[in-house]
Length: 149
Image (cartoon, rainbow, N blue to C red; front, side, top):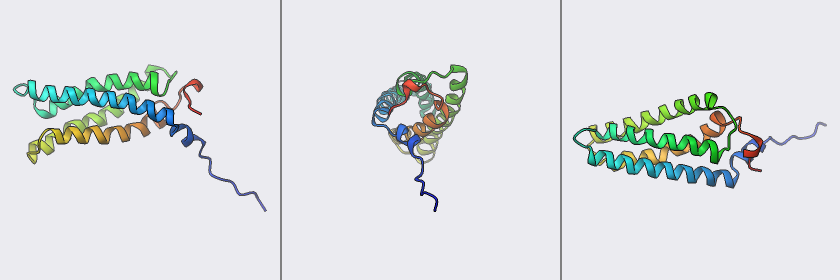
């Protein structure tokens, strides 16, 4: 009778290593705070020039640059080339920008909700999606030194 084989969960162990989650959370929290502060500032200070949706997009772009560098060099300690990883990060950021643009446009513009609601939703939804995509697609070729055991 063949031996019973357990599923290989070693890849998920390294993904969910407490140190990696803590690093991701710290970079993500800093980027999220940067986004929220910039979005709030741009929406209030530049309200004559920027709609809530454009203020959110501008803030998201600033936070995205910080996020890419933080996750590449701190969270995942990736030795991959910028030529490979940056375009993939740009695709992920594009989806995040779409959410950061559409949420205020719909929730503020169509439903009249306060601008804080779409900002809060962006701050919650984007990090959850980002962790999985960053680990599995963008920084999947990280160096052995970057792997948490």
